[in-house]
Structure formats: C-alpha cells, structure tokens
Image (cartoon, rainbow, N blue to C red; front, top):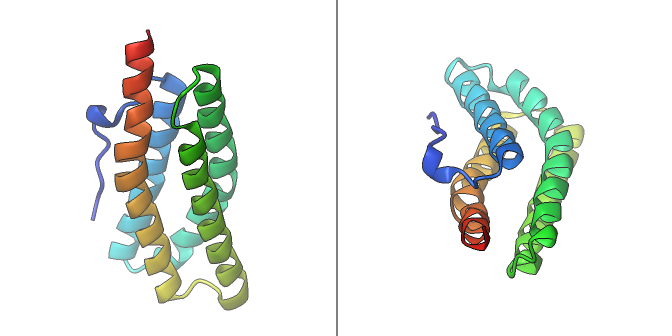
Length: 134
C-alpha cells in the first residue's frame, strides 16, 4: 500500500513540507519492503530514521507555531507528545523482541495513522492559519 504525497497536504512552510515528504518516502519504503517480504529489515531503518526525525521535526513545527501565536499550539504539542510516547514504546519492543512480523505491522499502523490523521488534518490546520495570518 503506497501513500502518495499530495500538494493539498502542504502546510505552506517549505521546511515542514520537505520533512513531511521525507516521512512519506520512508513510509513507502517500508510498505514496499513489506510487499517484498523484507519488512523486518526495513523497519529497523525506518525506526532509526524516526528516532531523529520526530525530535527535529516536532521542534521545527512547534517553533513555527509559537512564533506565529498558533492558537492550537498546546493541543498540537500534546499530539506530538503522544506520538513520541507511542514510538518510544515501539522502540522498546524492538529492542526487547526484535523485528517481528507483528512489530512491522504496528509500525506500519502508527505511521499510516500519523500521515493521514496528523499531517492530513492537524498540520493542515497550521497551514490554513499561517495563510490567513499572512
């Protein structure tokens, strides 16, 4: 299952949009690997990428929100914190149990939900707000 980046997902901030596009690419790499039955190997790469990505990306997004007095900053930050907790639990599971088929499914689910729910809705709201503010 491939998830396509579409311009209607754009926040309108190049740095954030480029980071989102990279996340879509990495998610698709994982989905394609699962189709080739190499998901267990690819999920390790995606997990390592996400470890760095969520820290840098969330700081970037939150900084922009604060700079522009985004009214939903607190709730947006809470979504980031929840994703970080969920991802941390998955990383612990990977360290404890290794890259199992179930683990690959959990990572796929977490990423897919994030792409569709958070980026497609919550982050899109940031873009709408910034466009109105400018």
